[in-house]
Length: 145
Image (cartoon, rainbow, N blue to C red):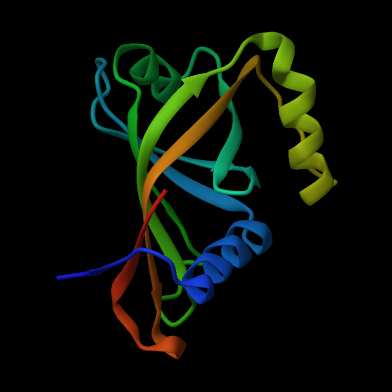
């Protein structure tokens, strides 16, 4: 069973470090015709909030319109590297927020671009699970936000 941490600065710092230094997220959604569905996307973060631009006519976005509960993973696809798994709720933002989200992503990844209509989405994380074998955090440490 994972240990729930009330206040552990090292766990918070490690989560924020991963959010800042990793580029890709694997987002799991459910609810629509294509359910469950997993999508890979680029993201940016502000503190513990995750921001992405999702394809407006995509399967993940369709699922979010029905069910905003999500799970995601942020990793380098290497179990020896630190990785995050989390649960949260997606908030479909107004299209006028596209520039705000796009600018955040571009500040992190200047080469980022989109090729289809997209809608900004914010993920309000409820619970983070961080695994760090280097820190002996296995099973994962848990941080409720």
